[in-house]
Image (tube, rainbow, N blue to C red; front, top):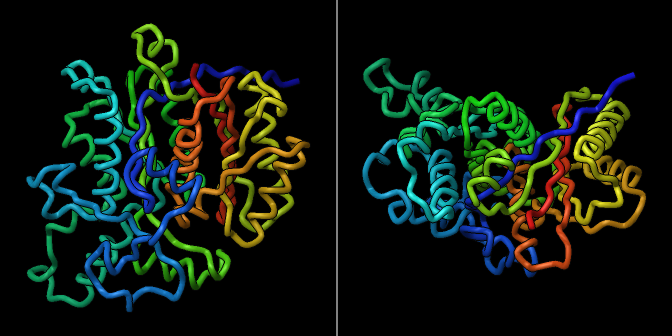
Length: 373
């Protein structure tokens, strides 16, 4: 007989969001409630022609004035992928309203979800090594961007953070793995506070990958964005008088095989049931479900079916990718951000959300989020 161990909550004390809806939770809330008029396409966002992209909706972050957020120094060779993560982290840190002390910087780390890092940077360097005369015409300034932890490294360097610095690669469910790692790192006292999130950039290669794979419905948009949360132990935050946005309760994720739909169905159901039990709540306590497989062929129906079986009652759904586009490894962080954005409208009681994820690679899992009161 196995005993399910209850988890100690982590509290989100600040949140930074960069998405096709704009910057911050306010812009995301408006998009979720009423949609976005005139999405920005890559031809505007990147000042280049749209000819290289596939024929499907493509939504980029609009009006990304980098210098206004990050200044003008030290950004010449940093790619867009890292820029998105840097701005989201800055928004989260600025939301606290407090300057970080030396002690804070020493105990604050970074955990970011991704799958490969920047595909654009990797392909640019790879292409140069094949087409250019080596080594003289291969641009060395691009090399730092090709490593998977380039973004987390830049976040730590620019903010002088010396806590744990980790990138978690796990496809669609990478954000869940990042939360799990954050819980372990804080529980083991390797960091007191962590910037936890994910980032995904819009690019020709990623858009063509989705288009040719057939994984998405034909009219499904592809987007980009980043969401980052400042997270710490719930008890520590409360003792310090820091007001939380929400508590991250149980987080379950696992690999259940890429080819067997029945096995993945059982895996996702098991994750949800275990997460509810470890959170100390029941299915009746769930007020909203934030879905991760929207617009994915086969997976969308599978995810919906499992949720209907476990909850066994009508529960409102949040479908982030319908509003922001497919976000892949940044999906879970932006699913959580979407819940926080909708919770900006007050309610009579503390609400609880279930955030689910299931990917074509066989990874699946969920996270339980409870509103702070």
